[in-house]
Amino acid sequence: MEKTTIANEKTSRFFVRLRRIPGEHWYLADGSEKNVNPKSKLKVPDSIKAQDFLIDEISFFNKLVWYHFTCGDLQGWLPKRNIRKTFRRLDVDPIKQATQSDIDNQCTAILMLLESSGIQLSVDDLKADVEKWNAGSGSLMELSDLIISKTHSIRDLNGANFRKLDKQLLRRRPILVKVAGMDNLKSSLILLTGFNRKTYYYNDPWTGKLESISQQHLRKHWKRGNLEAISY
Image 1 (spheres, rainbow, N blue to C red):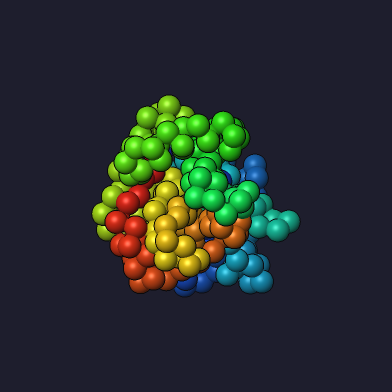
Image 2 (cartoon, rainbow, N blue to C red):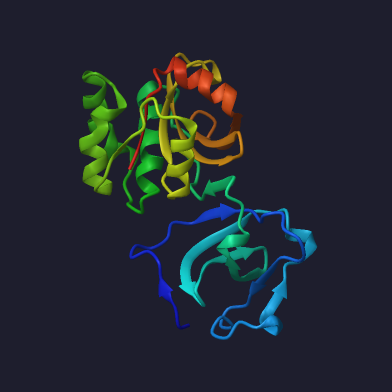
């Protein structure tokens, strides 16, 4: 395949959806991208047009940006210009906290954030750092040394507007958010992993599942958590 990959780092996997456009959506089969012509364009089946497409590579060829996708048994290349800008969901596996303790909630949420960057570690390895953090101010930005040591970056999103949160998710970076009143808990951490217009997706350590919440309700619980949020 003759192409230039956009990112130097391996692309973290994420889900996209197709835009509503006139005419038929199409894709290219693997290996057919060198000479794009009408005959090389394959129709996206109507049965999957509304589904989520898993992206595992971003490339540039034929003067366009392309996403390599899989959707069921189908795979190939989609042109970026046919992808919705109002939807993005990162492929971050939810993890259920081991106990109902605040420490396990915090460790699990932070673990999911760090593992999304490609590193591997265990909750036990994190506990000492999280317990030390709890002994201090407990503000999310006080986790900077830990986050930077693992991911080599930190992004302060305290008090950010939702446009900035969306932009960070479009950069394929999940967001650690402190909330209060969610799951009937006084305080807890969740991991934002995507959005669909004014709906947000998050991994909830309390349930161990991917959940969704309206922007309005997320704002309410986030405000109760002092609008704290960080990413990398």
